Image (cartoon, rainbow over all chains, first blue to last red; front, side, top):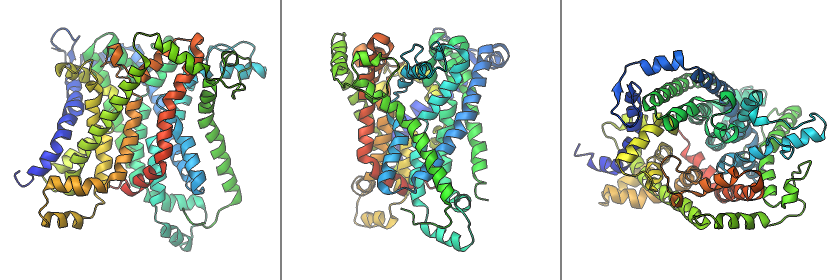
Length: 290
Length: 282
């Protein structure tokens, strides 16, 4: 302990805050999920009741779960693959063009939550750009209430979420591609690699495994945590809960109804879904290039 | 820049570039639309059919925006100050604390090191929503509710920065540190005078990533006083104002997005260089 005194002192401020604002809340959340707690009275232990209620009695949670999984299954892999594919294509451009294209793809995710632009595009009157175009070319006769019609809400949110999703992961991949050792490609060509697809699978991807792992963690977390876009576009609550996700459900019980125990159970379920998915995906990624 | 490589089919190249163009357009057009909208006079915003590009650009929307916010209870400059203060303080604290913690994790050997780092990596998988409720309780125990610090202090301990910093510091050669030790420098001296200057490019990456997070934060749930709220919150209110305020809303969108984009343009080459050398290697 004495020998390492300086190490611990240097880490202390960060680790203390990390413990208070990240580790402790997770632990508190797990503990609270087994209680009834309304912020006024002392929490009352009720065992697994929150969880049984969640899965057996709460119909809206089942909608939220279905929507969240749908989001994750569609936006997770698509955005992950898109991050990689576009980084990969951009990497072959000249430096100037590469800088421009990086900005084009990265700009939506850094522009500070300006997804309310999409509110103007999918505005329900004829001045919304989508309605305007469709009306002009005669596809529809009356403007569509895009964000108030159940069937359109999810596809629109998925679209916007994809638009936003080329963020940290994308930047990491661009950087990663530049670190791949050039001599590997020359060696590969000698060893009989025939086209760019083989090159990609046998050389590029395996060389980028650390970045691929990191990108996966980021993309998975984002895909399961959809809430802001849903609330900004579809409102809260959305029409007939069409855009309800696990996180909006959590916000509903946590900040509107003050059922903290129940909200904690929702948070805990989400946390285990995320960690579980991460483990599975990391196992799959280890097989890349084999 | 990769060298010209073998076996590129022309058809493959063509289809990849077509793909890039189509999706590039999808990414950038909404932003182009937003930028143009900010300069449209009111009659052009409500023209049918809607147009992408502005025909008679005007600064009226910005003037309206400042008048609109000038009439509100809290002056617009206050929102700007709040956002700049939260972003600045959060970034400085995070870079300092995360670097200090990353140095021993990267270069020292001590019991518990592996476990600590795994917990940080695991916490990359949390979404803020998971911990929002207990965080509120902890904030209120600490008396931080309705202060800037409820947003700033947790930012000091985000996991992303520690992760990146540690990977980057691992690349500093050990001989450099040993030489300093032999010359009698203390650990703190080594950290401050040798390690920190060496990871300057990594600061830039951290600053950009954290800037994005903090610039977009609105302190929702922790900050209630109107005069402490962020630019992003004020912007949200203008947008929520509905159709009559379409012009000012577009102006707000432009102001909000222009700052991080400008920052990225100027630091792009160095950021990518940093992320390439820091390598995310495990």
